[in-house]
Figure (tube, one colour):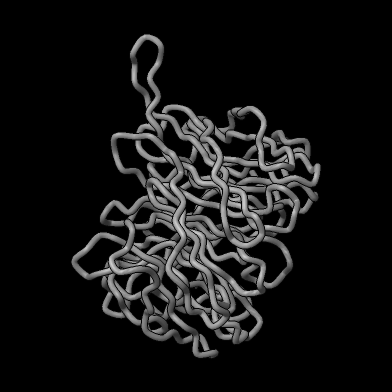
Length: 408
């Protein structure tokens, strides 16, 4: 079938829905996949995770949602996916997925957040084990009974340096560390208050990385705080807290510092990358007009906030990657609060600044129920050794990277 540049074909589960959009791309238009199950029931997407679930050498994708079992998108080896709703058992709403080997058996398991009880909004870490062929077992909930409070973000990382992947998680007021015994079984979490001050409970966001260069995984958490001016005005700002690891998984929490202004709705998403190429991780967050950058000092601290204006609307969801292959870290971002049909690539200059910016079509959009932008992931989905971009909103958009910088 021939498609015009703005033509569209939307197909059901097990096949591909292609949406060709005008505007800037990375050498080819994005491809769109509907997020519905085999009965055409909408998933209500919440997050995505790329990984080789069936161990055939190419990257597949798992997408979690609010209404149905997570969808598996199985790669044919060339970057084309078949959608399969039988890969993961249903357990109600799930989010924050990642594909990681939690039980050290050589295949990728699914880590996510899931409801502690069916009628409760409180979420805890959840593990679904891979059978080695890309089919996942029943969810195993992780955590105490009852949980300390609902989690809003989590990552898998070896925080105690013993060779297996642990869980670092955050909630509105604290961070928690769940240590893995090597088999994918986790102990009760050790919880660290973060010191965020607010009259409301807000979701926090977490990233992990070695901030001190000592080989240990540290964490950065962002959240909203309320600040009162000398004149008595109260405003809400995005702040961050650094929690440094002593090498055993025990954290020392520092004071919060500002990473963004006028955070009226929720905290900005953080990302870690060496933006100035000095060997230290720097901190970037989305902003009202672009990207806010704080350069790391290599001891766990960050310099002053530099706001780089790159877009009119700004964005909050960001992911770092070298999109154009020039050796400098770039940033891909889009706005989760607006219709996510377009995203911005911020090309780094290698000195902690911005060399150029371009807007690209994402291939995703608001869901029929208003599902906004949910996630961005970077993965080489077509096996050509450059980073492709996956955008999740009401649909999944895959932007294959052909030339590194957009055409016009």
